[in-house]
Image (cartoon, rainbow, N blue to C red; front, side, top):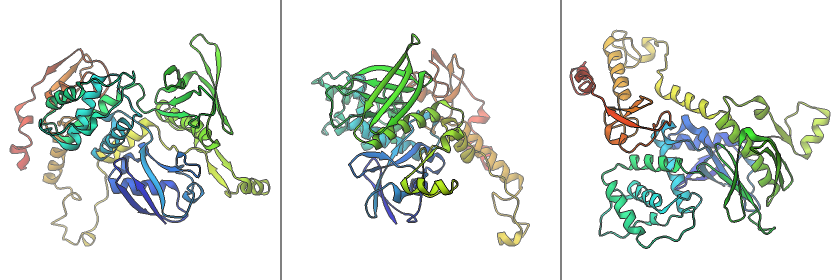
Length: 442
């Protein structure tokens, strides 16, 4: 069975899976093609239901039970759990985050707080897509951005974008993508998924946004009403098209918020989004009460009366496997910790014991090269990965960037603490020349 999976830049991947395959198999094959296998937990697949709604595919359930119609099935690869760019360890993962953020900016789902920031975002998008801007060229298409305050775009907005383009001239595409994600991560609606009655059944129908820190109640005009932390939520439940949320106000008074959505699937999707995002961002690990929760269709319910352990008609409600901390730790172990394996026999290597292959031997010179490579990588700037770390942030005292990247940071990329000042550090000459000097020749 073939699945056509579209990326945020409209590039379509063709993936072949078993007709009875689950959604996780399809996602893993897509991420393997893109090179983001170790950080696949940040992503999900979306599909259009029979009523035209865009819903998240449950990765633990079979594809054929969720996607209507005959193959090939059309799916969309999207970021499901947003994290700041400094937590992304692979360049390919960061690029997919950038493509999704760029799409949300151009389509108005992400709105800048003001036109000054909108001009900088437009310049970073243009720099990442087209490189250095030529003054005689037409304005980049990234100028068509929206802002949260709803003010009309100023007449000199293209000039503001041109000034920002001059400031980022010479910046690499990967660096521009990083700084765009960094600016977007400061926005209030970063990582939010908004649910609203789009059919407009009732006048003044409110909406609800589910984000990394909690839920946000919106008026009908998408104006922010109030924010509710996950710790203040008492209960959440969906009943057909209605969704009910019970939470505590700051004064300790209990309130009930109800939202009528277009379909029963949308109400179930809202309940699922709150549970999964709360587990991903706020919990140390995913509890078994979340991973084992399931429902049955009518046929499976009837069979379960006679056989309680049957898997017929069984559908899992949630498909989250790891929390934010677990995804980062697992990816870091897989990418940076060496895999220790027993030395294979000489017959398996196809060579004599006196000439073992590199990477599988205990040769002192081979191990020295591996240690040197790891040391040089550890001393590289965590943002541009081109220059040596030479700047420390205070008061947190973290060292992870070069002086050029440190000049653009307002907060520490590691601990998110505010930077009062930064100080240039000078490493020993042996460290600076280790990549090209005598050490590299060993």
